[in-house]
Length: 114
Image 1 (cartoon, rainbow, N blue to C red):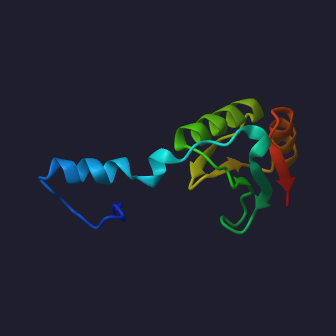
Image 2: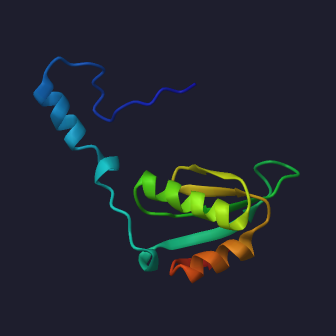
């Protein structure tokens, strides 16, 4: 399993001011979620990652990880499929591209089906 590393390269420090500085400048915490109409999502079907399996991919979500998790949960619930989130990408089981695009457009997302 690959360990996550912080961008500063410091493994451990007893200097609380330094650690507070590092944590306050963490880019992932500052990232604000764009409103749905400003998102530029790409939706496509992937069959190459897992041979014999179809995966609907929703890519280019810009925002906090909590918000993409919430969107993925809502999509999975509404479409009746399983799925996961990985690196600002929502992966849905099966070929549900049309349904996903319709649902996203209904909720004011800017969607491009590739």
